[in-house]
Amino acid sequence: MSAVAALPVGHRAGEPGLRRVSLAIFLSGVAVFAMLYEPQALLPELTRAFEVTPAGSTLAISVSTVSLAVGLLVLGPLSDRRGRTGILQLSLAASALLAVGIALAPTWPVLLVLRALQGFALAGLSAVAVAYLREELHPSVTSRAIGLFIAGNAIGGLTGRVLGGFLTDLGGWRVALGGVAVLGVACAVAVRVLLPAPRRFVPVDRSGSLLRSLGSAFTDPALLALYAFAAFLMAANVAVYNAGTFRLESPPYDLTPSLASLVFLSYLLGSASSPTAGWLADRFSRRLVVPLAVVVTGAGIALTLLGPLWCFVLGLCVFTVGFFAAHSVASGWVAARAALGGRPVGQAASLYSFWYYVGSSVGGTLAGQAWQGAGWPAVAALSGGLCVAALLLTVVLGRTRSLDPARR
Image (cartoon, rainbow, N blue to C red):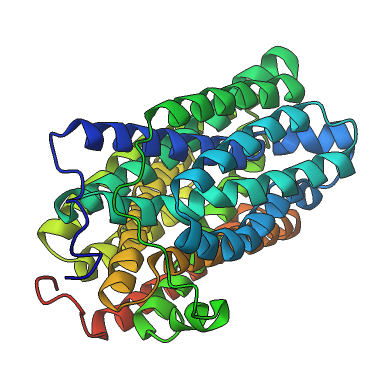
């Protein structure tokens, strides 16, 4: 039989290995979003500290997501040849050390350079996590484990933003960034201790060229639709949350940074909706769950247009539930589709994440311009249009042929 057939069975439910993998990948997810998106809660503060415009302040996020997207194209294929575990651990350690440097940055250009380097380092986590879970876990628990990783993203996004808001009130933006750097270091140490050695990794044949291997991930219409879906959906998410911070600290709400950051508690709902959506996808169908989640996302945007503060907060909660549900199922769909179609899983997953973060960079920048130009209605229109585009892509996905006869 082939080497693949001789591999040990992936970690199953109830086994110690599954618990260690799940906790390590969850903490990796926490670290990624805490370090990547913490400046989102500090944008008004950074605007004042460095005397930049609101649109200019969004570069603190956009430069990281752009370099992260580029890093995915390098580290995803590299992980198919060299393995996932080492890249994951090294990337987390490097990004945590860079977080310390960012908190000490003396000027705006230095901060942006360090943020760009950190984005590239974080690419190692985003490029390999889903592929690692797909390889090392039994198929019966894969979707739920991926949902747990996405839940870690949600918790990390919440922790970085809320912690940043409160620490900003206590000691300014440097203290806020330093607090998240400490969190990143702690997660890096924990993941180094917890993550088991790989048991099922099989290197990609070095005889094939990287470009040919990469090109195979662009030959499936379903994968192409999922890449575009990631870009549109993430652009909508970052647009809402980038401009949302300015919205909450402006009239008529006039919230302080610590109070404004509390709105990111909505990420707790995202951490719950991710594994729930994975369970529903396993039980029913990805083709059903993903479009329903996008509809929920769009409904949340509509609620933010109503005047009262509680409507705005409720809208963000609904929006977050839908976003994380759609993203968790779609990211797992990419890994499953690539594996069933005989394509490199690491490259397909990294391409999904590449377009995900390209969407983040574009959406965040456009949101800053929309906010400066016409306020929140323009931001809501931008994000709503992106959700409509993502919903249309789910129609394309619904019409593609399934490669798994056991799933719809």
